Amino acid sequence: MIRFLILSGYFELMMYLQVSGRLDQYINVHYRYLIFLTMFLSLILALVQLKIWTEGEKHGEKMHAGHDHGMTRPYQRGIAYLLLILPIIIGTLFPKISLDTTIVEAKGFSFPVSKESVGDPEMNTQYLKPDTSIYYNKSDYNDQMTKLMKKYETDQKLEVTDENYLEMMELIYNYPNTFVGKKISFNGFVYETNAHNQKYDFLFRFGIIHCVADSGVFGLMTNLPADISVKNNQWLHIEGTITLDYFEPFRRQIPSVAVDHVQTINSPNNQYVYRAF
Image (tube, rainbow, N blue to C red; front, side):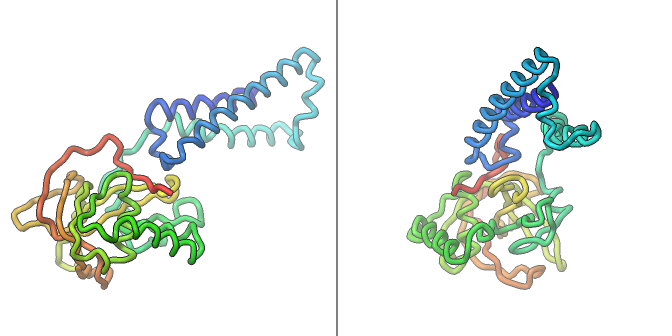
């Protein structure tokens, strides 16, 4: 019976995340089909366990011994069940956290990838530049970037949207000289920081490459007009020209935007952007 309850709990959790709109806080929405597959399999397996349990009840638990799989002691089964229940508890009871610049301030950011682990030792929190090279060998990654470049290299104005945000940022950081001088427009939230007695403004979006384990904050440094005053977490739509500027904390030039037009906007319902593959 416990196995039926756990499996049905997974089905209900996936359904809850889908209906409540919280699913996009955990995985890349392009993988939504995996959630439907998980829901289907959880439901089927739950029904199988229910059938096994009811048949065992009818036959005086004769079948019980055949399904312990080596966990004959109560504490062993208890630990296994607890580990299986934890995702259900976390997914339903833990509050959803709104992301803002306090996360950037708490962790800081580095380029291209920080050394801070986020659970999976093979994953690192990413900042500024989305880096998908960790998912390919070198030649396949170069082929992937070449293919993407063909989509944008002839464009003189880059319209960065929620759908192409991460691939555009990766290309701009990988091939900055190709994009210098081109016009760009995109939305994001302001992150203002002071380093070495100088103020720097960035426009960021929180992004998920595959799942929350490889999420990060991505965007460009901005040179705003002198008469524009902004504050952290303020959402803007900007238009300008891509340049290269020296960023003292990194001791290197990084892509930036010489901003011509600024418009204050409302924050989107979903503040994440996702990498399409």
